[in-house]
Each structure stands twice: as structure tokens, then as C-alpha cells.
Length: 286
Image (tube, rainbow, N blue to C red; front, side):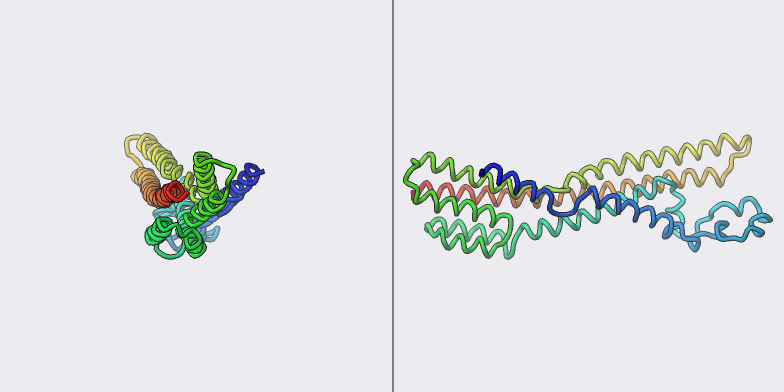
């Protein structure tokens, strides 16, 4: 029954937070809308042929049918069909970074975590288990949850006369490990998204870069003796825009992934530190 209950709790933890299967398609729609309606706004271009009347377009010079960016957003729009994908990647990194920030902040609990660890260790050295449990209730974080489970088992084993000392130590260690296992899915959920985008964003940007360079070289070849300077510049611009967006997204994703990983490692270290103190205290007093 305990194993089944723990499995259900682990599943519940994994299901908490944002659901990537639901959020990412929504962010993709937002990314496409930003590309079409914000970056592609006619106000970002000179004499946009998309807003001209049929008569004016019919008598216009052929070159006027091309888009000529007038602002930076218009330049980004000229990056081509890979741009909305890269915009989606950037938005995804931002959204899930905020989610991880608030989750890890909540997991850290209230008050200073270092002071909490020192307080618990001090109380355990004095064998004040009830006071330590009260501190866990005030802490209200992942570390406090694990410590509370360990201390609850500590009290139960202290009055148990059916097990010898070695068996009690094994049971105490198992209880702490199970409590840690229940907390880890919540801490590590969606971290894989940041890790994946740190790599994939660069590869997708490289695809956009290659497409842009293909267009540029095609403009060189199709112009005969006189290369089409406008088409050449557009192709090179498209390549560089995709490169910039991909590198920027990848850099931000990697930095945030490493930042949150260090936070999770710090919480895990605190849990291990107090777990060791609980085991040492139990071995000394019982």
C-alpha cells in the first residue's frame, strides 16, 4: 500500500505546474501572430504593396511590389518563415523560466534556508524533535517537507520495540529517500524544455541561415552577368536574422537552465545535509 501511495504522489507531483503539451501549441500560435501582425505590420515598411489598391499596384513599378523595411521589426519580419518558430522558442523559454522561478521559490520555503538548516541541526543535537517538526511546519518548502517526513519516522521508530537499531536506521534512511523522491519531480519538471531549446534553437536558426544563403546565391546565379543586388541583400539579411534570433534564444535558454539547475542542486544538498544530521542524531540518542 505504501508503494502504491508513493507512486500516486509522484504522479501528482509530475502533473503539477504548466502542461507543455497544452502550453507550447498556444505559444506557437502567439509566435505566429507576433510575426504576422506585429513584425509584419504595414507600418514597418515603405509603400507596402499589401495595402495598396488594385489600380495603384497595376501601374506601379515592379520593384515597388517588394517589401522595403522601414524599422527594425520590419527587418526581422524579412527573416522568413523560420522567424515565427524562433519567436515561439524565445517565448517558450521566457514562460517556462518564469514557471521554474516561482516553483523553486516556493520550494525554498519561507525564511532563510541556511538558517533553517542550522536551526534543525541545533535542535537535533539537543534531541528536540517536536521543536524541529514545528520549524518544518513554518518553513513550508520542499526541504521542510522532506525533513518533516524524516522526523515523523524518527519519532515513530524511537518508540518502536520490534526492530533493532540497524533495522531502524535502514527504515529511517528509506523514509527520507522516499520523501526526497516525492519532491524531486516537482523541482525538475520542464527543465528538459530549457535544455532542449538551448540546442534546438541553434539548429533551427542554422536551417534559416542556410535557406537565406541559398536565396542569396540563387540571386547571384539568376542575374546572369548582373547580380540582383536587392535579392542578394535580402537573402543575406534573412540568413543573419535567423542566426541572431537562434543564438540569442539558445544563449538565454542555456544560462537559465544552468541557473535553475544550480538552485535545484542547492536544495538537494540542503536535504542531504539535514538527512545526515537526522541519522546521526538517531544513532546517538537511540
